[in-house]
Image 1 (tube, rainbow, N blue to C red):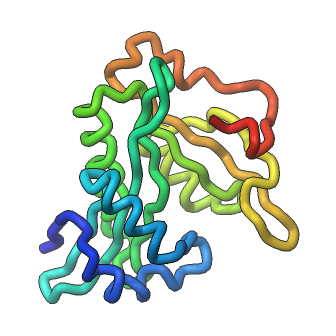
Image 2 (image 1 turned 135 degrees about the vertical axis):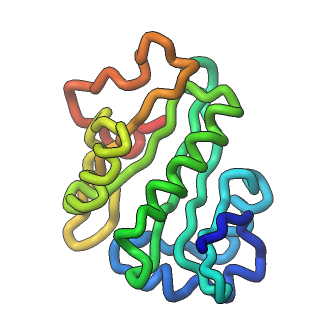
Length: 173
């Protein structure tokens, strides 16, 4: 039985097996600590009965007015626990938190080459809102899709009307 629970500082010593995936963005400890301090309600772990971290989601609430939204900063599931629906469970959790915070939408960024993730997000109701050129650093840099899903507060679904042109990272608010 999988348990969802809040992320703790001790988890930073136990989640390396999850972060080893090449498509998972990893950050410095101070970055994780900032999220844990500012948005603890958005930072959850999926834990196995033996205490192994199966995956986690980390996000935040940001924006002003009709741009007030939940943001998925990182979602990852250990290769040993994929195809069990954990990513969808973690996404549903973050969407529920965003609904409680009266967000208009939830958004996330994903590499355009990550077809598996894009398909999963599409199946969860997300749309490609816009392309962000050269969002991910590398050789070469890679574009990202900004994917969105409207929350119930966005009655007219204005937040998910796709842009017709790509943007640069500095133009992302």
